[in-house]
Image (cartoon, rainbow, N blue to C red; front, side, top):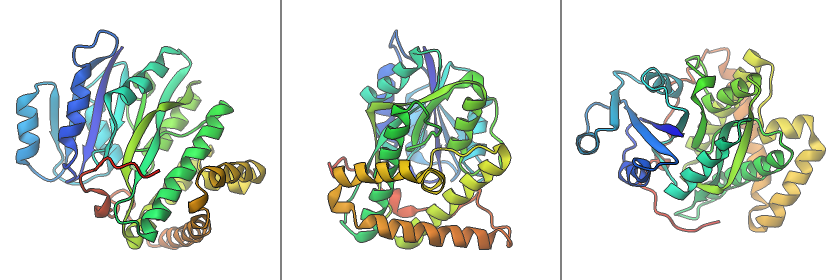
Length: 309
């Protein structure tokens, strides 16, 4: 199985060395062969990136002259590659070679078109905002587990995901939640999306309330846009809560069972979601640009693999 990795990056280069280190283990693997790694970078030439591409000839650097969103960045790499599997790997998260292998192994089942890992949020300052951010990631985990068990999972994400290259030539560049959009494309093409339970993505939690609120605003707008285009609702907890409340209650019950100390944050999370939805609906009249969204700089620090949850 031949795969390539796309790493969109907007100034976040702190984790690139570690990312490359666990990916190169596949370069001469007979079962899963790494074809190319594409780094799409939008902040001019950087000495750290240059040192990486000079060291490894299979690491390809694509420079964007201006920031045009994640969908555009991924398209630049898709134009150059035709591997069996594409892994999209955010520059501000980490995993390991075992997790990548677990993701790729799922594609041995012909009916599988996309695969996602479990997210592991990392808290460094133990602040309330970080705990709310962690609660959001962990609630998504419980949602994904439930839907995967039912074989009805319809989302990609967790900052790392993989899909069959044959299913997608290009992402419309007005798309905000490109991962959810790809999931919809896979569904239309008759493929399933599966969770790789043994695969973990380590993700920095957001440390500033203003940044977290903007993240949620953009994500909720992106889900709404995908629904308007496809008339399909992807596997977000909000949609499940609105349209399948009994299933949502089961997910919440499981969350409280596993993360009792974070239970109170669920109420704060609901409040923030409501605020973010109101904001994006107001901004629809001002035609706010969600493609070039505000960067959450507090998530761009180098990841320290501390066990939090």
